[in-house]
Length: 639
Image 1: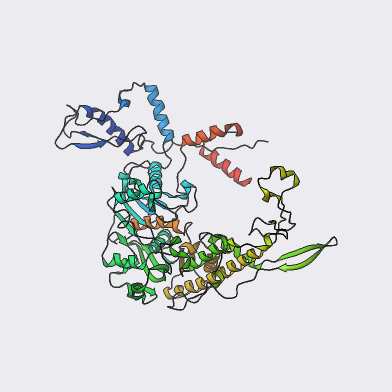
Image 2: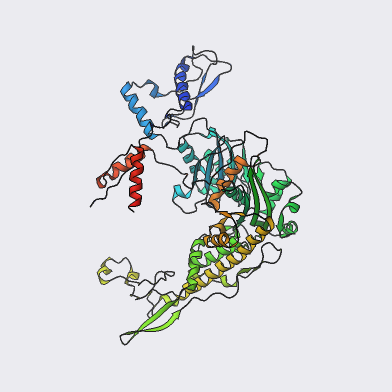
């Protein structure tokens, strides 16, 4: 029986407060005035009126242009006349009404008044390129999106041209509405090193190198050259702002545990040069006081950085924060840096040899799965350490228990010690030396004749494994489809080793991480905990921190990783450096942000989708709000 699908298409466009808001009405009036501008005389001081919007968006057949009209009157000759054939097309009122109706249906559900000023927070040129846009006057977050949602490529990075264009299209605004941009790229600086030379960016595009391998690199939507107020925020500080600005409590401690953050030399140089386009933890405590105000490990970092072949990067940081009538104040109290132990020009900036908790966990992920960013899989693999498999063989028609297969835990810890004590942390990578597990040839995967009997190395649950039957032989794509049948899916030797490594790494992370957070809870006296950084994606550790350390409240945002950097940059753009006497400062967020802040379909797009699938649907358009809610409740309660 064909199921009834209630398509709850609410025709509320005309029911909302005003479809033509004051700004739109003003724009319409301006267009009428511009029609008379064709008769206006030249003036020594002409004013500029831009006609490039239809329903708040650029028309598909128009380009940016300005019609110059006189301040004095609307009579006389035209100073500058762009030709537009549409101005001479005959139309009747009925057609006009249809056009208006079509424009209304095509309006974005996220459209805002044309006078809205935007602050953009951006994470760019690294992985997880993301944008967050907020109303500069009200602090309301209007739009946020990760690049992967557009390209459908997980953790996609690079430039932000498509994100900015998508954002402005959805809000029905232009670049002129953007008043401030705060950004981060923790690999290297943006403003002085990349976007200070547009000609060089175009040169890179011509060769297809560096950022120029991707379309949009030198585009205005990426460079945002027309926007004067631009700055950069250091990586861990952006993480801190991303969580404390939306925490559901007014005071607390923020713990940032990451793979790698900003470099020490960049942070120090910007502070010493009094670079107003860059803000870091050091900037918050003053030019000469950061060693006194912030507990830094190692203590002789400044000397070590001078002698280091490469640089040192943020590893773990701790902050406290307070929100009140004076605004949001964030105070850094601890930072541990980790050395770049291999050339940052190599794969992933030498990340696999860094000594942060996040980098070590990522190294285990790479060793097991061949992917530095598959830490969630490693966390999911670790609990299999407590599982046992019974290997049974058939002897004279009876199943005899042969042996129990149990993963072996690696005895020696990979990481142990206290992160906050200089020189106490001990790291042993011996269990991750040599060829990664993902690349090893496992004899358990082949029979005595050399035929592969297993095609999924890490698929080791208790479900029966079934190979292709005779009926499917005619459909096989290659010889591997003739895989012999194995009655039970048992873990291979490589899988057991992978379980042992994942369990060891997870155990060490929990041990060291718990001790670290407990120490600073006691030192600061804070009872509310915020977590950010890539390690905060480890839900097992998060659970233990919340349950076992006695915090009254804990908050982890939906995006604690680098996709949350844009939110932190946006929050700093809104609330960073607020003065207590500044009554015009944007209002602080009073609740956590929704993770669903991306594009919404227009009425026309929804109607087109319904029309496409209509042969398979029973369609009912619901216009009554109460009935719509009743149907939703009924559908949810019925499962």
